[in-house]
Amino acid sequence: MHEVSIAEGLLQIVLDEVKKHSISKVRVVKLKIGELSGVQPSALTFCFDLIAKDTPVEGADLRIDMVPVKVKCLDCEDVFIAEDHSFFCPDCSGLNIELMSGRELHVQEIEGD
Ligand SMILES: [Zn+2]
Image (tube, rainbow, N blue to C red; front, side, top):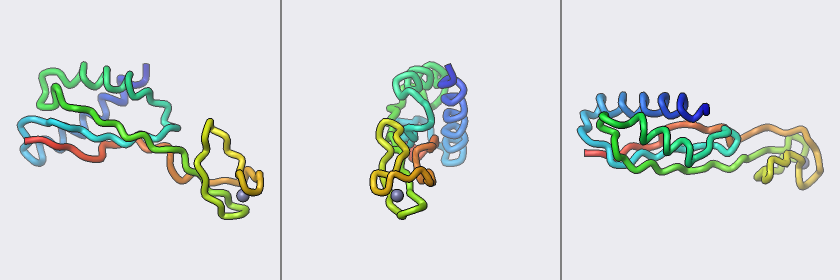
């Protein structure tokens, strides 16, 4: 389950911010996760809750913002959302594409006291 190591990495980032801004209790953690990152939001939430125990992040509300896979066709400049991981350009059926978003995996915002 690679969500454990991802959760550990994210928690470390949150804890660094907590230290920097002298936050005593984190209430909300907002994450941005690309659909191509392969992360299961429910599994990540589960792991995060588990490892956040006994830290200022314990009990924080994890809000996950899933980022769709956005692709640009380099042949016709069309930008489209690759649903069902179909990377063919809907306009010209080309496969000469560039990934614009979908691999995100980061902490976007932290709210706390
Ligand atoms: Zn195209």
